[in-house]
Image (cartoon, rainbow, N blue to C red; front, top):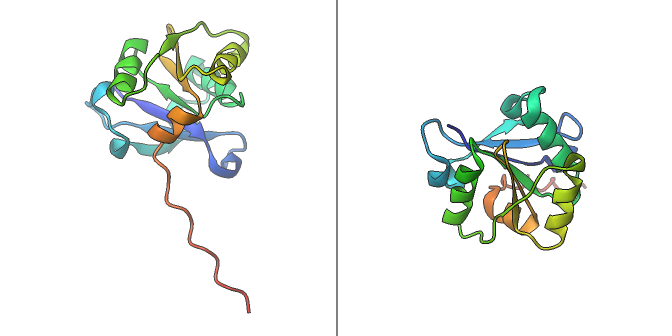
Length: 145
C-alpha cells in the first residue's frame, strides 16, 4: 500500500496543469508515513493518465480551494494518516460536480474531505502547507553587471 500526496506543480508543472504526486515508501502503512518519507513523482506517473484516480485528482486540483490531495487505499487509512499529524475534523463528502462541492466545503473551513470509495482526500491550504514537503527554493540568479 502506498500513500500518495499530490499538489499543484510550481508554475503550472511541466505538463501544464499537472501537479506533483507524493509517494510513500512501499510497505509503510499510510498512518506511519511522515512528510520526510515522501518521494516526488509526476502526476501521470503517480496516478496514471486514465482511471478514476487521475480523473478525480485533476478535477479537484483544478478547484481553487484545493491545495493538495492524498490518495490512500481507503478513506479510513487517509483519516488515520491525518489524525496522526493532528488534522482534526476530517469530514466525509460525496464527490459531486467534478469536485466543486468539495472545494466549496474547503473554502467554508473544512480542513479536509474524504471522498468515499476512492480513498481520495482533498485538503485546503493549511493542511497542504503541513503535509506537502516543499522543495528547496532555487538559488537566486547571479547579479547582472
